[in-house]
Structures are given as C-alpha cells and as structure tokens.
Length: 156
Image (cartoon, rainbow, N blue to C red; front, side, top):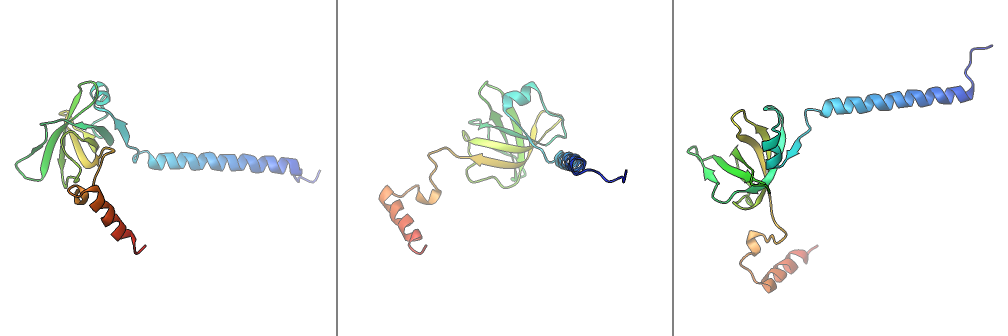
C-alpha cells in the first residue's frame, strides 16, 4: 500500500475540514458579537422580567402624555415609556433630543436599566406615524408642496 488517499476519501476529508472551518468561523463571529447584541423590550416585558443592570438593551413604547420633563441641568430629560398593558418605565436621557421626539409619540431608547429601576438611555430614536409631514411643508397647501417638490426634482 502506498499511503495515498483515494479520491473518495480525499473529498470526505475536504468536506470535514470545510465543516470544521465553517463551525469555527460561526463560533468566532458569535463570540465577537455577543457584547454588541441589544435585546428589545416592551415596557411590560421589562417590568415583568428586567434585564441585568449592565446589559445593553432597547426599550420601545410610547412617551406618556405629561411625563416629559427637562431637569435642572438643561440637558437631561426624564419621561415615562408606556406599553399596552398600563406598564410604565421611567427613562432618563442626557443629550440632543431628536426633532420628532414629543409626548404621545413612539420611541426606542437604547441604554441600560439602572439598579433604581430607571432606564438610563444613551440614544433615543423617535418614530413618526404614517401621516408624517416635514416641518417645512406643514403650513403649505397640497398644491404649494407639489410645486416645491417639482422645483427640487427638475435638475435631476
């Protein structure tokens, strides 16, 4: 016997090595991304089963009417995010607030739940409804808005 593998066995070894490499790459990618994963919670889910205090998560819901308050430093705001089942999570955010962020609107807050039960947001994402109209077009009639759109697309 010469010690050489038959072509059939060579293909089998090649397939096994490729599978091992694929599994290794998947494990390496999941290990590298484990700290980047950000789980999404609704207020009722967060109240029922809160995440670990240092875990990065997203909290989504509606900004409760009458809950938006600017704190004494002028940069920090606090508000309450509510869900469908009358659950509410207090949120604190320091930074620039998105233009579409208002009471009664949808919001996704990225951050961490503090030990005191207050969600400390690092980032706010404001959501608009399907009837969104840019501020520049709010006071225009439909005809004026169409003319403005026509003017901006003529050079394209």
